[in-house]
Length: 516
Image (cartoon, rainbow, N blue to C red; front, side, top):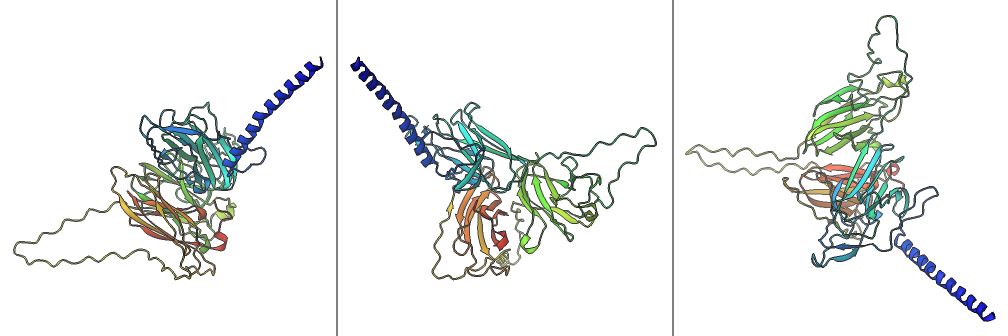
């Protein structure tokens, strides 16, 4: 009896040891996962948590796979969010030995950044495989900055198909980071598409319905409040005023059409556009105290871009937005102030508005005149080169010599049907320490990230960092206009094929609090 008791105790002890072994292994695997995802910081209670992917997801790739946006594998190298095709969750490029000898590689994450969100707009991000079941995609959205990210939304459901979609509204300007990744162990490579859109919130009226008169003469139709401008009411997409290109509309204001409304006045306009146009819409001639805000929308009423102040540091509170058109239809614009005014102050507001157009195409040269018979031969006249529109500020001599900053142009796919041109782009960023409104030696801002994006395809063409003089330069190949984006300073500019030298002045109060 005693021997049996001792044997039973040995058996029980063995089972306890065996039960502890997998627990220890699982803890080690969990620790390894934490090391691999150390850039994901813990979030506060009540929020969703980052998706814990398997330690190593291997993709078996039998066809060479390229990504249209390579090297955006971390939040620090995130690409500007837009609608893209040809993205990949494997390193770019991945080359198998042959179709019958696929290569096994670890999957990668793709990161995108939304640098300047419009509060309360509905934003939609949707990622879908372009092949048949080659990926099972997950998506997460973070706020903050690289190293201190906080998860705000996610979609990691493996039972809703192979794609992922998140529709959400943001309460702040951002930046916000979108992470796209593989969530299951089945992965055969290939590509996927990202679809990005935003929709303005629907305005709701809180007015109490008025009773209908049953007696007396028919009321006179309401003609609007005194001092309203000639286009009222145009406070919605459906009542937007149709305007023409290259026409200036003056004597506009923010006087409410309906004085009983508790909403402030917004002015909507629409202009007919076609692909290839570079349209710039802007406000001007602001009366004292007027502060405009401008947002552009496409034919489907999706937000495109916006601008509050052209030069806040210099006191210019007008607004201006440029857009390279890729569709045919209506280009909508919303002009407002973003705040409400007492009725007594509305009559003093005033502004002018126009949408101008610049062409992307080189005019066809006129035929060379033919001399009459027996006429003396003409002497060719050497054409005078056109005067450049902008002159680069000379680089000051620094001691010691600033280090060379390497700029890496990215491969650009040729768009069929559009001629390619070499577009020179240069950027100077400086901190105006003495408030002189000009660049002085030693004021250059080093390490500012700059990116050049093809406006026709939305692809990233080049990116780099400013040197110790605050400068960085690119020459990219594109079929038309490109966009220069400086995410840290929330700055962007449209660059025509002829190229441009851009200068960004930063005052003390313009600096952001954190690097996105």
